[in-house]
Length: 498
Image 1 (cartoon, rainbow, N blue to C red):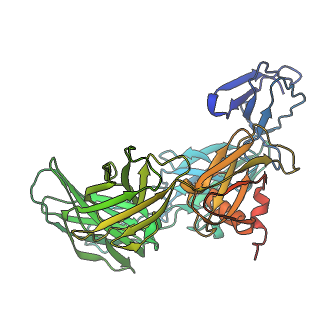
Image 2: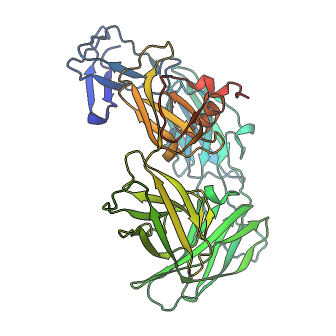
C-alpha cells in the first residue's frame, strides 16, 4: 500500500511519546533511520483502512531496538474498513439523539471501541475495522441527583439507559454485528430500554456553625469499605438538606464536610443499604476533625533526620485537602490535628533507602499500616510507629518466554503478598532496562512474577497470574537474586498452584 503514514512512538522514559514517522512508497516500503536504542510502539494510518495488530502481540505491538541494530522487513497489515449506520428510537418509535459506540468482540479488530454521535433524527454512522461488534447506545438523559419530574396525569417520566443492539440492557442478550472488510451495514435500529427509576437517599446536615463556606455530601458505593468507589456527590441547601436521587440497590456510605476559612468540619461515616425504598431521614452531624499524638521510632537512626508522618485517607482522598501530616521532633514525637473520620494509610517520609514500616500501633493495638481506622478518634488517642532500616530485597534479570535476556523492552514486575488483595501502588514496578529490584520489603511470603501485557484489566490479570506464581519467603535483611521469565495473558487461565 502506498501513502500509509507509519509511526513509531518511543516508550522509553527519557523520550516517552516522541514519534518517528515515514510514508510508504508505491511498493509499500518505508524506512526510518537514526532511531535511538529503546522500545517503540508501532501504528499506521490510511483513510478508509485500519491497522490490524499481529495475533499474539497485543493491541499495540512493541519493537525493541538495540544500538546499531537494523530491523528489516517489518510487516504492517492493513485492512479495508467497514461502515455501520442506523438509528436509535424509543419505545414509542420516536427518534432519540444519542451516542453509539462499537465494542469489538476480538481485541485484534480494534484497540478501542469506535464512537459516533447520533443526529436529531436519531441516525448514526461510523467506520470500523473488520470484525464483530456490540453496538451500544448511550442516551444519557436524567442521571443522579436530578430531581424527578412531578406528574399528575398518571404518565411516567421515561428514563432510558445504556442499550445493546437490538434492544437489551445487558451484554448477554445482545446480538453481535459482523462487519466484513469493505461492507456497508445499514438500517440497524437500536430500540432503547427503559431504566428502572432508582431510589433516593436524603436528609439533613447539622452542626455547621456559620453560613459561610459550603457543605458537601459525598456518596460512596461498595460492599468493602476499603474499595468503595465514588457514586455521587451533592451540596446541601441553606438549611442543610440534601437529596441524592436515582440510585440503584446496593450498599452506600455517606460523609459530609463543611469548609470555611478557619476550619473544616466532618460527619461520621454513615452506611446505608438500599433495597428499593427511599431513605430520606438521615442526619449527618458535623464536628471538628480528630487529633492524634504519636511517637516515631527508627532504631539505628542518627536522630538528626527530619521525618514526617502523613495519613492518606482511603479510598477516596482527603476531601480535596492535603493529607493530614506532622513533622516528628528530635525525640520522634508528633501531633496530627484536623483528621476526618475514616480509614487511613500511614506514610513516613523520607523513608530510608531500605526501610519499611515494621509496626503501627493505635492505642497499643497492632494494626496494618494501610488500614488505620480513625472513624472515631478519641481525645488522647496515640499512635506508635516503628521503622526498620533493614527490609528485604529481591532483584534480578528479566527473561523473555524463550529464556533469553529481555533487554530494553518494558515489562511489569509484581511482588504480591496476597493474590486476592492486590495493592497496585505497592505491588507493581515498571522495568525498562531488563532488570528489576524491590527493596524495603516487609518480612513475609510473596508471589513474584513479570509480564509484558497490561491494560484496563491489569488488576484481575495480576490476581490470576499471582495465584499460580512461585511463592518465595523474604526475611528481614534478605538480599535475594532471582531471574524472572515473562508470563503472558494466556497464562492467567492456568490452574492456581495448591
